[in-house]
Length: 357
Image 1 (cartoon, helix red, strand yellow):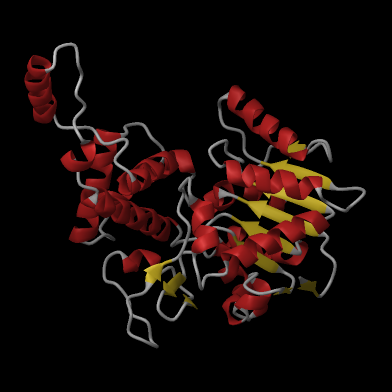
Image 2 (cartoon, rainbow, N blue to C red):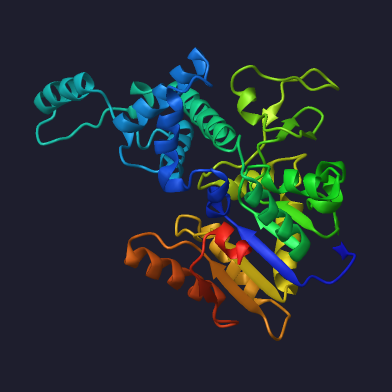
């Protein structure tokens, strides 16, 4: 990997870093979606899709957060393991097979009983709900939020983001009058040359769409991915239907990263890992390092362990939830990831509070 200068300061942010701009955090995502459902900003068809997803969540996995529910639906599209036979099917098997074969339990074949087609549609609708909810939530961003993001661009050499929004791209454009998307290979980790300030979007972005036939990624100034799930868009080169390319919260995301030809996810993750090993300061903003994301924990643990700086500084900036045990669990996760290299410091601030000080 070729770099124009040595890395110094690296920032990693999660959903909490976009919360001050209006984006819902994981635990509040469905609440925000419910608020938007009856909004005049949604068409009748969009509102119907929102309601169907919310209804299915209550029926299939009530009280789940957006990551849990999407993982559940994604898993159902790939395997019948979690599918439940209908009540009529259960009763038939109990009455017929118990009489025919005493002391036996015959398990109905869920792969026949339940088609995956409904879950494929539900997965698509849930992906649409995620994109449309973020689109509505971030329409009006306060000026102090833009200033905070611009301060980031002036302060940090590399930004590692697990978010799909365009706050950083638009802040860069406001700050420099230059479109960050004009040089994606150099600033966004698509190739092996990385120019500061670099923005590495580890899960992709809602303004990226992909032509599978041409193996080409289109980047837009606007969030357009959710539109692929409603009106669709075609490749300018070959006329093929464009596909969503962002990595949604699924357990098999590294399979997507490794096997998605034409989308430089492997390069981005490699560049991010290299940056972690070279950084002198690493700041985590609004990132929970969730136990559900074992891949990311291993990724950061390996990078920090291999860091070459003799005086590495790691700071975790987060707004504590009300539950004290949640704070302790979060801090313990970061302590575990950083040891034995360094002991992280913790700052109890929101993203905006930290940059306004």
